[in-house]
Each structure stands twice: as structure tokens, then as C-alpha cells.
Length: 201
Image (cartoon, rainbow, N blue to C red):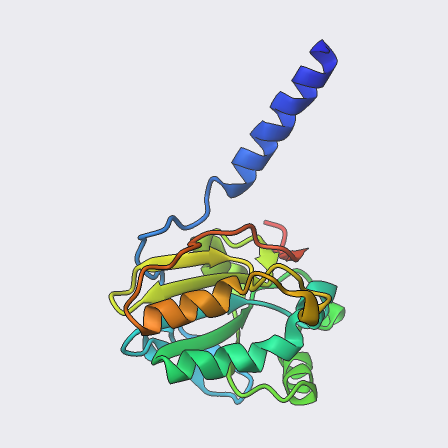
């Protein structure tokens, strides 16, 4: 019993530590003016992308099975965001041996072309944005309202691998709520995905 309690305490500590640095709901967009390179070659900032009703930031990548499983929903989320006057951007934060693990800019271009992306896909050089957001997974979602305040963070929905069995469309619901000026019912969920590959310091 004592051993079990010790294990529980340790696990709780680890989980608390892991999420301690994540951007809090209500926080403003961090590093809004930091410049990123898109797969098109142009330079953009989060403030450039933000629209009248807000900004959706999706930390993602090329190789993660979770990301690939959700790919068929990326474009629909981008379309819904644009329809609701919410800027949409996907950011690749993987910095450890980026080119060697298929996460370089050329790899990103090929990946985007393969899946017919219709949105910005940028490089987070040095993972500065991921660090500022406290993002730990790919995908990891952050939705801001028109005032630039964080109103949703976490997962896309409740079933990455089986789209037809999705019961909770967390992000789509949040997008619709922000677009209609309504309160988001579920403002926070646990991000599910692969750990971000941060470069060693």
C-alpha cells in the first residue's frame, strides 16, 4: 500500500511538472511578432495571421502517427477557421536533427503537397514558440479569440484514428463558438500526440 502511494505521488508530481509551463487560458498570444518561414518561402508572424475573431495555432509535424491520423481534418478546420474569421497556422517545432528525421523545410513542402494543405505551415526555429506556449505534443492546439486571449487548448477531437467514431469535436465546436461570440463549453482537453523533438541545450 505504501509503495502504491509513493508511486502515485511520484506520477502526480511528474504530470504536474510536465504541464506546469503551459500557456494558461486567458493568456495573450506570446511572441506575436517573431518571424517564421512558411513553406512558400515567405515570412510571417502570428500577429500577421490573426484575423478579426482570433487565431488558431496548431503545433504539428510530418512524421508523427497521431498527426497523420488527423490529417484528413486539418483542411476542414482551416476552412472553418477562415469562415469564422479566425486565422489558421500550423507550426513545426521539431528542432532536434530536423532535416535528418524528415522535418526539414523541404520535407514540410512535400508533406503539405501530399495532403493538399491550404494553410500556412511554418518552421519554429529553435522551438521558441513551442517553448513560449508550453506545447509538448504534435498536434497541440491553441485557439485565441479576437482580443488575442487563449480560449481553448488541447486536442482536435476524441478519436484520431477513427474519424467516423468521433463523439467530441472539441476544436470545431470551439471555432464555431468563437465565431458566433459564444462561450466555449469545453475550453481545455489533454493534447494527444508525439512528444516534440526539442534540440539538446
